[in-house]
Structures are given as C-alpha cells and as structure tokens.
Length: 291
Image 1 (cartoon, one colour):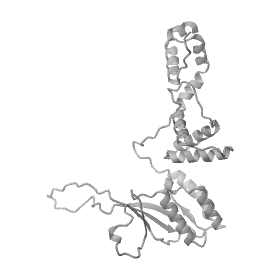
Image 2 (cartoon, one colour):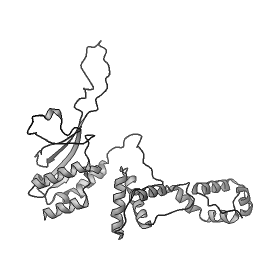
Image 3 (cartoon, one colour):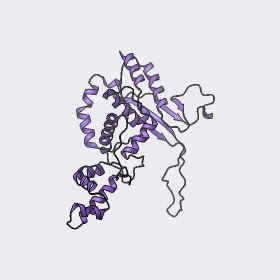
Image 4 (cartoon, one colour):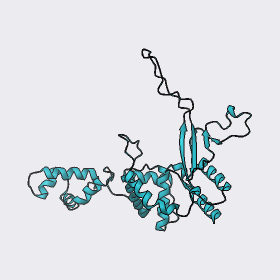
C-alpha cells in the first residue's frame, strides 16, 4: 500500500494551474492526467481560495502541512504585529521580536511563556521570515505621519512638563581622522583619491527644549586612551567599548547617572535604536523614584 504524501502549497498551486490548462473533461479524467487521486483533486478545488490565500500571505510554500507551535495564540499575535510594522517598513531585529512575543504573551495571560532562541528559530521558519539587508532606493521620511503625530500625540506628552524639562537626545559619529572629501587645487593639478579613515567616536548630544545643553557623552574604543594621561577633569562624560558604539549597557548607565542628578522628572525623546530600550525593572525603578 502506497504511503499517502501531502502536497506542499507550491505543489498544490502547480496542480491547480495545470488543471486550468486542461481541455474540458471530467474530474476523474483530469485527476488521472495530473497524477493525483480524484478525492485529492476534489479537495483542492473545493479549498482553492484557501490555498491561494496561503500563498499570498507569505506562508512557506514548501511546507506540506500547516504546522503551529505550542503557543499558537502568541505566535499568531506576533505575526499580526510583525505584518503591521513591516507594512510601515519598520526595521525589526531578533531581540525586538522575542521581547514583543513575551509582551504579547503576558497580555494574553500566558505569563510563563519564554521566547527562547529555539522557539524563535522555529517560528521564523514556519512563517517564512528571514534576516535580509534592505536594497534599493532609500525611502523618504513619512512626513505625513510625523505631522499627524506632532498634532495628535505631542501636545498631550508635553502638557505636564515645562520646556526646561523636555529633552531630546541623539547620536552622531565623529570620524576624527577622516580627511575632507574636497580640496582646493590648481586647475591643472592632478589629485588622487585617498581611502577614508573609519576610526570614529560616538557622541550622544542632548539638550532641553529651552536651549540648555547638557554635557556630551563620548564613546571610544579605548577605556584609557593615552591622550588622557595626566588629565584629571574632562569636559565630557567618556566611556568605551570595542566598537565605539552605543549599546544598551552604556545607555542604561548614562540614564541612571543622569537620573541620580535630577531632582524632578523630565521627558526624554530618543529614536527607535534598540540600545535605547529600557528594561521593565529599570522603568519600575524610575517610576518609583519619581513618585
């Protein structure tokens, strides 16, 4: 007895396409020509809309049966959230997806759910999601959405804060050894292109709405640069990591240090960098301190 084999979504679509190309004939004769059983062909024709929708919804077309994980509600909620944010072309990372899965699980009432690396890998595979580098022309900023947010959300956010307590923080890279891209030269002089030095510092600037500029946070590669020898006081806050990048640990330390200096609560605006994600425990600490 031949073992029954389930067809993948891709194979079902291929059968349906070939069925449409056949001359008008009975379902039994069509099944023979397509090398499938009449009952299977009948089910595919009956469920044709569902098969085509599965293909359009980015379901892995090589998967034979629709498999779900143990936490089907959490996975479906995460897929819906992921679909919405990708429609807005939001960049989504693995840590962000796993954190969102746990947040959604708590809302559903599954407090013991943990988004492990293994679970995340299986979920990605089931939903046909891969990690890619975006290509093509860079999209323009969504000015309409930004203006809408400024008019609808921004006034309520700053209603409780005077301008001196509303701060904006942002990073910039300082390529301190990079030569200028342009130069003055004699008209007949031949100029040569040179490689640009990639050595950099990361600088976090932050200022209040009324113009108060706070001390810069500078991130370098070396913890104890030779140029600091003999220097007792710096006009900036300095820290380091191997890449001279802003990371979650550095941002958290900086935030705690600033919080300890403050005697009142403030509103701080930052972009959606993953390093700026405040943990739940830290958020609870700040809330407790403010109260």
